Each structure stands twice: as structure tokens, then as C-alpha cells.
Amino acid sequence: IEDLQMTYSILHIKPQDLTEMGVRVIPENVVSEDSSWGEDSTDSEVSLEDFSKQKHPPTSYPRYHVVRRLTSNHSVLEVLRCHLSTYNPPTKCGHCINILLVGLVGAGKSATINTFLSALNPNRRTISCVPTGVHPDSFTTKLKSYKSNSLQFWDTAGWDSLKDVDKRKELLTMILEGRVPPGTDLQDFNPYSDGAQNRVIPENVIHAVAFIFNIFTMEGINMDLMKQFQELQTIVSQKGIYNIVIGNNFDRLRIPQKSYNRIYENRKLKRKFAMLSDYTGMKKRTMFAISNEWKGDKIEKTKCILALYALKNIVKNIDPSIKLKRLNTAEAGNLK
Image 1 (tube, one colour):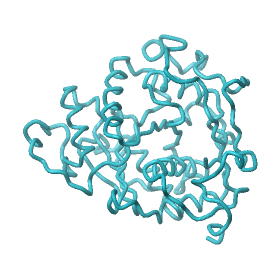
Image 2 (image 1 turned 120 degrees about the vertical axis):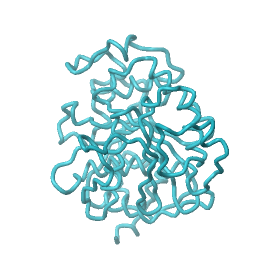
Image 3 (image 1 turned 135 degrees about the horizontal axis):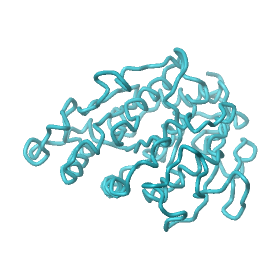
Image 4 (image 1 turned 180 degrees about the vertical axis):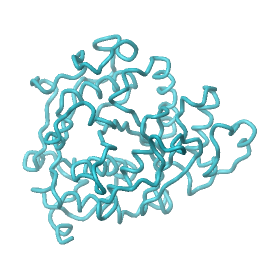
């Protein structure tokens, strides 16, 4: 805890300090073997049949990325966890920051919540309070929330399970506004009749949205679904709600574990994020990688830091004025 008193805030690192901290920035005009975004993949698991029919689909932003390099050590882990666990939201957010997870059926929304809860646990104990996988109750149909200190995560039904596209968009709007009570069965809920008169529940208003993708299987998503996703993302953005993309299941890309602290420099992951960026219109700097696969009863240190890093980004962008305790820059790693 004494490290918390040391120099520099992790949320206010100046660009000139990046080199000292171990962050390597790949500029737009520098091409290296490991910085080729958007190229056709040669990986055996990738199928371009549906998701990627063009090599470089048109985009409205430059094809570059700021590489985020992590320093995986106990001090960084403890500082991140301590700041997130003791964070006090701004008055406008009430007592909690509400983070809504949105994704297709089986994208890993529930597993991602378990990962967040485990990463926030002081002992890194794996927490599986949200049913996942082959569990008989793992198919999420109801709106449920799970809280860790001042962060509250909201689990939802896979948006593709709601076949009525208009209902899907109206339901998302109501959830964002805090007008759908927790425990509501989203499959049976009719936003035009059941919820037409629902009042806003202030403590349930959503402050941030994390769109969840399984980056190992995402090439199987057809373009119609991606267009529908863009409509949902537009609804979120038009309400001024901060949103990011979380790609999970990167373990199956056969990235060596020793490379996890440089995961954002990995060519396979960069291809995946370039594809998502091209087809969702979201910038690559809003995309984060986490792992929902654990071994034993503790979440691995680097996987824990990856999860906390995504949460730190959300908190910082919801509350830009936040000023946290100071951190030794030599151990700050990739905390830009």
C-alpha cells in the first residue's frame, strides 16, 4: 500500500513519460513486422466467408494503433485494484458506476463479469457467481446486476436472441435509461406495453457499455448481424454513453503466455481488432483484450491486469476529472 504514495497518477501520465514507463508507441508511418493491421489472416481457424469479404473495407479514420504494453508485476496490480475498489463515483452517477455488457448469445458476457469480479478480489480468487458455459442456467434471459464496491455490472440476454429488431432497439434504450427493473425477463418483456409507463430508476441508469465479442469465433458473424450491431452502438453513442469493445477468448489464438504482457503488439490480435474496427466503425483504441479462462482457484496476474486495465479506461472516461493517488512511474507500465 505504501506504493500508492509514490510519484505519478496512473490516469494522468504525460506522453513524454511513456518511454520511461515501458510503453512503446508505433507511429502511423512506421511499419514493422508486428504492426500490420487489417491484412488477410493466414491462421487456420480464420474463415473470411462472412465477416471479412474485403481486405481493407473503407474506414473514416487512420489505420494505426497505439500499442499498449503492460508491466505485469504485483505493485501495478495492487495499485490498479486499490484505485478501482476505493473509487468514489461523481455525484451524477450516484453510488455506483453502472456498466452494461452487450453481445451475441455465447459471446462471453457472463464470463466477462466473473473475470471482472475475480480481478477485483483482493486475493485474486476466481469468482463464478454468474452462471456460464454448460451450466443449465447459463443462458441469460433476465436483466441482472452484480456489484463490486462502486462498480456494478449488468448482464443481459444475447441481443440476437430477441428476433424483433425494433423491440431489441427499444429495449436497449429503456435499459440505458434505467427503465427496466432488475430481474425482468427480457425475452417476454414488451417495451411497448409492459414498460411503456416505466419510470426511470436513477440508480439503474447506465453510465458505460462494453460490447463483448468472442474474437476466436467472430469471423462467423454475418454482415446483417454486424449492421444490427452498428444500430445498437449508434443508440448508445447518441445518448453520450461511453462505450468500448472487449474481445475475449484470445487464449485460443495460440498466443504464447509469455507474450501476454505485450498482447496488444501481437499480430493475430491486431488483425482481429482491425476487422472489428472496420465493420463496427469503432476505433481500435476503444478495444481491449481479456481472458475468461483460468487455471486453479486464482486468476493469473497478467490476465487480472488486462481486466483491470479495461475497467480503468471506463472509469477514466466516465469521470475525466478523476485524480488518483500517485504511482511510481517505473512500475506504471502500460497505464496510459
